[in-house]
Amino acid sequence: MAYVYVYVMDTMADWEVSYAMAELNSRRFFRKDAPEFIVRTVSYSREAVRSMGGLTIVPDLTLDEVAATQENMLILPGSNQWNAPEHTAVLEKAKDFLQNGGAVAAICGATVALAGTGVLDERPHTSNGKGFLEMFCPAYRGEKFYVDAPAVRDGNLITASATGGLLMAKYILEYFSVFRENTLENWYSYFTTGKAEYFFAMMQSLQA
Image (cartoon, one colour):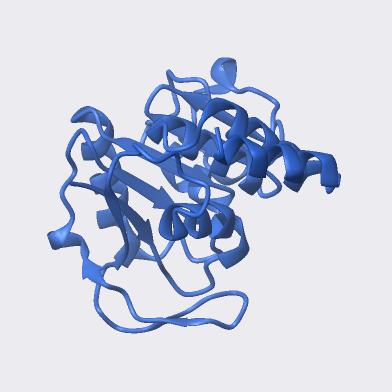
């Protein structure tokens, strides 16, 4: 059984991970033979956190209950509190995930936090625009690997800008291979454009 761990913290940008969480948790468009996994929220303690959108979230797990193994994924949301010392542990856990063959997806402010660990120095990645990581992370040395795109997937590492939540979700779904290929493409096209033709094509793909 695989696990997707979503790190939760005060001021987290809840909308940035909402597409991924909704599809992974609901399984509403999954192919019939999709692999099984469980989505769990995790934090440095079991105390409730308050998201930027005003949601109160009680974490399911603490970091010591997280298995940084090959089949699992850790998702890191944006937040304006990544500099707080209590979040250092999850960044170390993220490094463990990558070293063990597990996956990490980080968006917006979480990319800055990851940059501070050196994880982005030698892998293709993105963030909130050229110069953003240099501005907020003096230790960052990955300029030549920066890709100016809403989201970037490099194997088991997914990074995204503040506007890349939808594409990040697509890459996460692609990583786990839980949608049929044509379902995923129509899903992404529908939520990108709002055109009904893609919605109907997506629904038709589920009947195949």
